[in-house]
Image 1 (cartoon, helix red, strand yellow):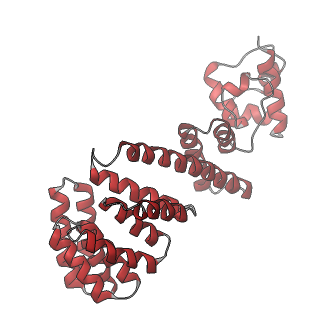
Image 2 (cartoon, rainbow, N blue to C red):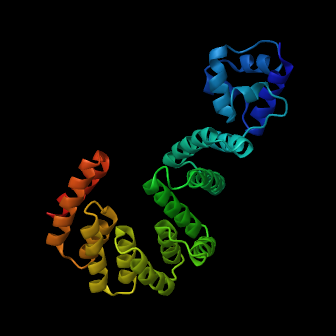
Image 3 (spheres, rainbow, N blue to C red):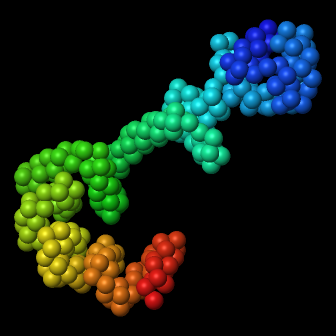
Length: 302
């Protein structure tokens, strides 16, 4: 027989402030059976172990471990496991259990705090993982896939802006440009970094310099349009977005910027026309899910 298991059954029951009769009723056995388990005289049917663990808000493995403790609920137990392992798999287990708990309405303020902490820890993991993956792409350079390289640089700068590190993006991008870079991506990055840092004045200044160096880059014109929109210079913004589309008819960012602007001012017909263009382009690119989402938005415009 296993004395650790028997001792745990008694200790966990007392921690949950349950009587042997209450445990017996929950498990569908007699109270004398519970007494014999706790005295290490007999052993429960293996099929009952998950139910016993559920009652005491532990895992089945916990029943056989020394120094196991009962938790207020199973979600708290899984959160404790995640705090130790910090693995995405254990986060998912705990997250699902907290969702059930909250849906039931039987949660405490401590449960909400624990659930929030759970997401806080996972957020930090996700941030570090994202930066690591972005850096792997950036380290390979732009030659492999310039479009993916640019999107990765942009996404990393966006992430940095969201965690209060937008200045770092500005400093590194400005350093590249001041060294005399003739790489269009370095110039795009500087303009985008200033936008994320909400320094629209410098963003506009370097945009004007950039279109003189790279007059055929649709992305720079798109950024210029976005900058002018932030400055409430909408006629100028439209001219730059139109120029971006003229240079590259597949420039979806410019089309989305125009779409959002026309939506803001209530120009439904223009919104519909642009949305139709976007749907067609998304379908050509094989992005069926994105195309369906845009089609749904188009339906709301009709």
